[in-house]
Length: 299
Image 1: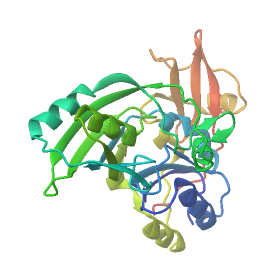
Image 2: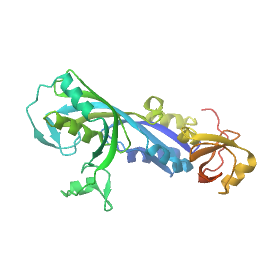
Image 3: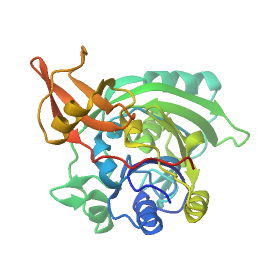
Image 4: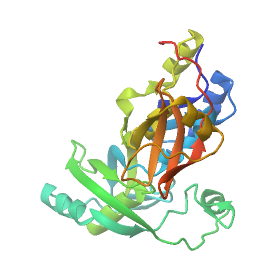
């Protein structure tokens, strides 16, 4: 029988929303508490980091991770959503672009910058999703947000209007906006025509379950979830004895453990996450406390 608290890595197929995937996980596992870190648009495929059960409390540790994507941009055609799911709003004669031109334009878009979210997005403004407002023909002012493009390369494909890209960027970056900006730097228009998320932080799509395989393994009784501590592997960790474990689970401070960081993970002697703790002077205050984990059978 699969446990119902932990980290689940899924390879989202195209044509479904991230919300659809979460609903399917709830149904398959019979667990209402399911959430995800980093929405993928319906046309996009790839890694979706999912929290299940009490481990959803740890999703914030995956929300801010840098992400890597691979995909295709089509030049000469613009859509109202900046991607292939939108309606075409403009066509232009295709420019002859050299590899050097495109590489220079991509290089100019690396680094820290501000980005205005697109109208067709799940971002909320005054309590309304932007895509709902866009469907009503309403456009509202969006505040630019700081992003960082850590790596960005673009190469030609056999199709003259399509170029393949690979980008690593900070959380909250809209790749379709980045590609629209790239087209503008090249003196043309363009839209995102394919997108796949390869990684999010230290999680990789190669380690993710396809949805059908995930369901099949659950039916077989296998444990498909990684333990909650997989969310916080990047934090400094220290092991606590039974007495300090009890205190942490009661929300009390402990003084054991040394770390230069302001936040760390307290692990019990069985290797399970007890709490995420924050430094308070010489002590550690629990800020996220996890319930005791049942013994995990190999799956």
